Image 1 (cartoon, rainbow, N blue to C red):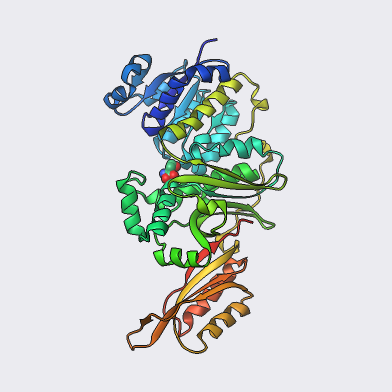
Image 2: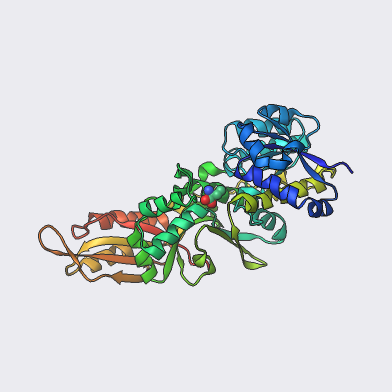
Amino acid sequence: MEPIKVGLLGFGTVGSGTFTVLRRNQEEIKRRAGRGIEVARVAVRNPAKAMAQLGDAAGTVDLTTDFNAVVDDPSIDIVAEMIGGTGIAKDLVLRAIANGKHVVTANKALLAVHGTEIFEAASTKGVMVAFEAAVAGGIPIIKALREGLTANRIQYIAGIINGTTNFILSEMRERGLDFATALKGAQELGYAEADPTFDIEGVDAAHKATIMSAIAFGVPVQFDKAYVEGISKLDAIDIKYAEELGYRIKLLGIARRTDHGIELRTHPTLIPAKRLLANVEGAMNAVVVYGDAVGSTLYYGKGAGAEPTASAVVADLVDVTRLHTADPGHRVPHLAFQPDRLSNTPILPIEEVTSGYYLRLRVADQTGVMADITRILADSGISIDALLQKESEQVDAHGKAETDIILITHITVEKNVNAAIGKIEKLATVKSSVTKLRMEGLD
Ligand code: HSE
């Protein structure tokens, strides 16, 4: 049988990695897919650079700067979009679908923000949109959620799904660095982009959590409803205090089913240090999925890089090749649930989520301060799980002693904690705004 023909849009890290893996493992891949998979055309902005990367394979592909020509080419069966972002990538993906082509993409921003439009267009045309590489790079988490765990009612997903921020947090904890120094180091080592905003502000992780929430709970992708908080304001002192209390701080993407709706949130999170997830260090990714039948499962691996991401892209190319001629009604649905059976379960606003909370405040070290604070918490129905008061080491401008108090609460509703914090900050003996971090037991 003739090889299936792929048109590659973009030849950066992921595009060139995909080409390399496909070429190196072509015989093995053909044995798995049932026919060869051939990159026939590659669209790039800079052909000279791509030519150099292709080396002795340069003669095997048609290089062009005309992206539309690849998307419109009748001989191309699958368009692999490796450009990223929500601009030209969106136009090209929709155009490929309109032309009846299957799409493979690593583009989490595109699917988290415009997924509904893209999946609807694909269903109308009876083509596949595969996106394993969009979440956690080489970890087959989409396949696991969509197919491997299909028997389960998924209860929650909690993932370290951004390697850049996990690397920075590891550096902050292990080397006692502040955020800015750790970020600079990450940039020098090539982990963080020159403009690291999407990574450090939690946007990249929230895109991935949004995609996973849709597949886990059978709801549309709704990035606009996700709560997004990154690590740029995280203070090194909180990493230290958390550790003293037996916790590590990780940027988690969380999607959780509750009786009232779905929690979809990304933020720095305290996790008990004994949990496997707490021990995922450096740029690695890991995702915990809890299903009612299977219990807790953990997926670990490289979330970025040329060949780990290509591993996911090529797996999608093989899936699409196998199912190319199947009746669209018999393929696995894009978002795991049948498109006409998606649920309108609401995504909860952050004030309605429940969590444990870590609170740090600087107070005057004098009689009755702790009693005032704990009374406010008790009046708000908030129970304290752990408490740490440091010996006074600092004095204020008048020579009066000050100290840090760190509290961990039992699980409670965020709006109650916010109300209590408002009252605590009004106390004359409280000298700073309250630092609030969320905590997940993951048990
Ligand atoms: N920038 C991402 C990370 C990889 O640091 O994990 C691509 O999603």
